[in-house]
Length: 494
Image (cartoon, rainbow, N blue to C red; front, side, top):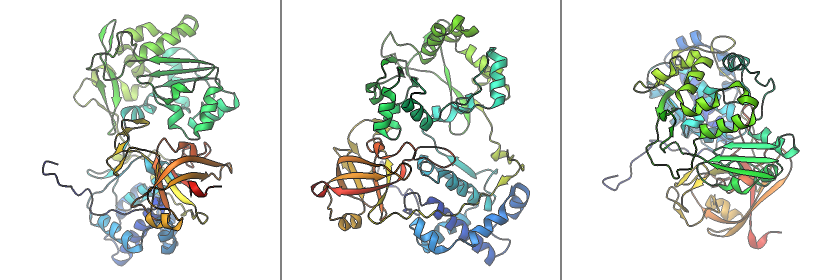
């Protein structure tokens, strides 16, 4: 940076087709097995496989019967490219596999991540120093919520612990994930929406339907640090409750407060705001939620909401009582340098499975060939963007300035459609889940170095192209990758 020169970020840069990761990973693993066949006993970590895994023989047999033609067709990579990638893996003594959210946002995301795990297990790259799996997440809210029981499907053990600590009967029915919440608001079975931060209307798929669903609610409440698009989609009664941000001083009756956050390495540590609040009238999230509970429940439901507001350490005491295995002596331990390490069973080679071993998971490569003329759209974020918050209209990553209503296309795909760089286009998606065609009009075609047959556009501007019923098998994560689309020149549209 000081010399004004670029720095190489990688030795190999392979452009996989959108959602072609599963096929690419199987290609690399297939090469690993072929290398083992050439030099038996020198490639695979047989000791790890025999002692710590099951399902290897079925997995190996599946790889042997997977054709290179299928791998090449569905990954978009040549056999030579996959050979090069596999050789990098084979020459490494220790391997850490990192992936970000994109790998989780297409239909076969769960199977793809299982292929990442399979690949690392072949050479024992789990549970030893300098090796392992590293899903990269954006911020501590994503990382830590479920540790505290923030899930639509709490376990019976967690509900029992809540009952014991607080003396109320937790709901027996499971709640809604994102997709189910949209459906419930749309059909009227859910009539109140309370958002803790976030920008639900903009971040979710099927924008038009989601906004209509929010509008059907009897009450929408947004507890937020900043105004956003969702605030403009009110229910019949709508509240915006501004709150302190985590970077702002939070002083309650007992004095300055601190909250706790969890980082990507499973460390829980204290966080204190250092900035003056934007307004003297701002309440903290704790004070707002506790105040709603106190005002809504008869006698507060027997829970000391005001005490929780006055002193956040009392909340941590309640967490410790509910989850003692993880958070015993919470207040004391969180003050230690680095905070509390929550542990990682896989790193210790402890496998929480039915067989007590890590499992090789076998999945066929899906045929994702699209009808002629359709493209695989992925949605992306720009240089100056955090989640749905866009700070300016300039994307230094890709050299795009002044607009976000663009679709990045391979030059050959542009030519095939009679388009040139800068042409005005409309975009139409084709969602197999409901058979509907959705549209995004007024975009500009941009020639870009992207794999043939693929396209890219910004999130959240193109979220309306995605059906709410398009989600990953096994996780129900709404899709942001592999959205079948056609692009049409504005002058030729019907």
